[in-house]
Image (cartoon, rainbow, N blue to C red; front, side):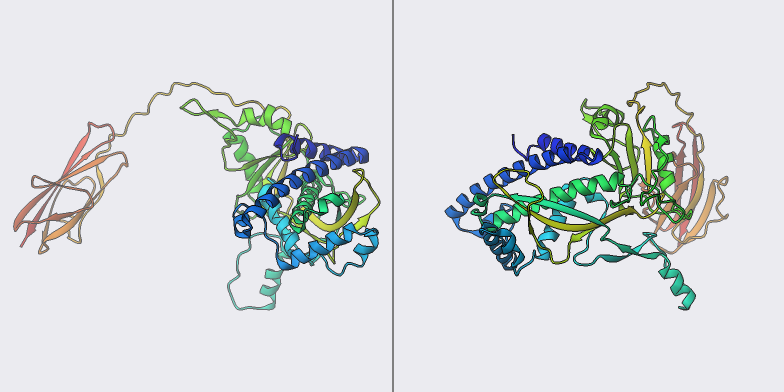
Length: 491
């Protein structure tokens, strides 16, 4: 069973999330063991195949076209020296004396992979911070400019929407077990292995915190209350009250979205990037039956919601729980610890006959305001039901009048009135455009100049003398008609 098998990957992630939720060190270690084993074996096999192919064609451009990441000279130098240090008899000392640190491009590549491949992290405001641990954040997300002479009061108002964010509150440690045999595969393999392990460590560590973290040495999760008036006890933020959701009808979803359509100050905001995060088992037992419809061709459409949103499965949530909100209103900042070093570690040995290495990252995450996310109880969510109802068609309108009539810039005599059906006009032009507007949108219009049909909104060509324009309006009932005439005299 391979690591890149979707079911195996999901099972391992679910086990890690469960262990994190239960503070089960042994269970987490076992899940980490499985993850490292499958990741290392799959990547080793992939690289062996790629190296064999490289020996055949020797063309890096061909490998690049096949998706093999090409290392920069700085990255290659880093991994070559890192590999040499890991092979030494005393890797702990060798790594301490290593004069190179992980290039920023490596960690940026990890963030790119996360944002591309991870359903939840790809839909929030996920920011690589580089070496910075403090950032300025616009609390409002959207802020209008202020007209007028620039004064201190206006400057104060513009700056009031920003606050300083400390992104070093949460430390993430990624353990990287590496065997000596694997190091012989070269810098490209080591790069892919390190990036894979960092991606998995970040994805699993962050997802749990982003969804449910209490803020006590963790991110502040989407289900937590935030804001100036929230009481924080022992570093932990209180959970929001759950909203019971028994169906996903247009009315129910509309009511839920109306709660996030305003900020805590009552100002309206853009509704976009909506996410619905649910437990994987709940998705198949509750959400999928409530969001699947049969198309006229007999096929099924999944995840059909009354308003556009992305449904995301996450083991971070327990059964019966769900989160709905604005993905772009959750802020997460992640970066490498200063120096970007990988150190030897004897703290854990998940795998036998492997040396274990450690790298540290820093992170923080929180909703930008308390209205951005809703905590839902979907334990009694009902499947979608179809109801056949015979509807009596409404009686079609019988209005066959015009609300406006123009012939170029000609003056109609008398002045147009809907109830008046006969007019005259004079012109020296060869042509004029006839535009007739019905009072009811369901009515149709036919225009004749003499016996020649003219499309409504098109130009009519005049003969010298009198030209009779006949405009017939047929009401939406298909029976009632009204006829307007305009006698246009061309001199």
